[in-house]
Image (cartoon, rainbow, N blue to C red; front, side, top):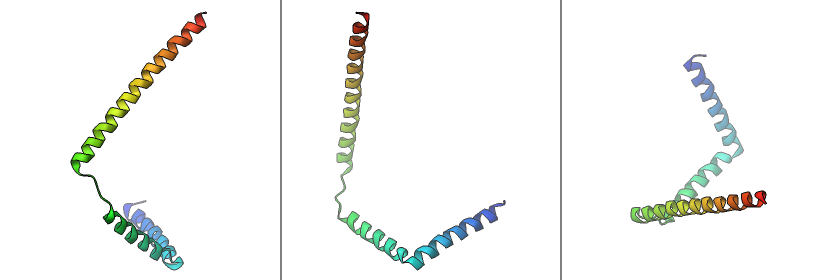
Length: 87
């Protein structure tokens, strides 16, 4: 297949989906959903860059500490299990 055939097929698929949404009334519902979502997002308070940077550092540090804790506990349990197997 050449590129024009593929473009034609995809255009037909999109047209069919559009027509199904149009005749079932779901296109209006989708439009209203997008409009209401945009209105709600305008009401949100977004963090400043400094707040975002601070939160990111906190998350990265927490993940590092949790990973280190998990590694240490894993090593302790491994040591205890190997000692119990030797007995």
